[in-house]
Image (tube, rainbow, N blue to C red; front, side, top):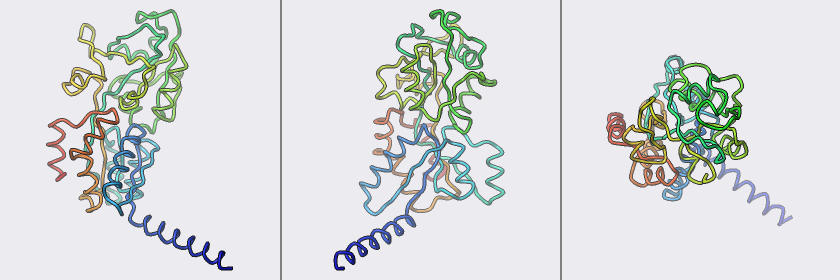
Length: 290
């Protein structure tokens, strides 16, 4: 009986502790591109600030933004900007989305290392993913049909790539994957495959080819793995990685945002394969009081 009472007491203690933690826990939801980075930022922040609790989950930028609109999270991770209709929905619910830029991404087009194609223009990439170019021989490769790998429509990367690169609709033959890691794994196995991922997913992926991209025919080709090419804009597929909060953030949210934007947070951004924010976004964040 004593042993049973002891077990029950421990269980009650754990339950009460978990409940207390849940009440104080920051909830961060959204972008698959950002999830590994923000999980690592949260881990380090909690290590350095005992008693602080943060839960980070994915589901895509659209999922995170919807959660913020419906007041189901404190911070929404988004690899794209909020849409006008999302801002209107938020305002209807008395939510005032405020954007903070925490990192820079060189969105990367990847192929299997057996593929001889090393360079493409932005227009060629768009034509490939629209299905206008169907065979690698059309862009200087082998006589093989192209296999397309992309993301689901709730992904911010799906939207950014469609708006900025395709400027049209994806081919119906594109295989829609649930995340960056799934695209990486698929390309490893498919010598005809091509996909797109956040640059942070390439830091441990040595067995992939990363396409050099030119903004136009006759332009200079640049790599997303070159930080100077990304920061200068020479690499054409650069985007900010964002977090959205509701209005003026609470003290707990503001403290975590300041950690992310501070020297230690930006070191972690670099360690996770992304790029620290340049001066223009530091000024943007400062205008929001960050």
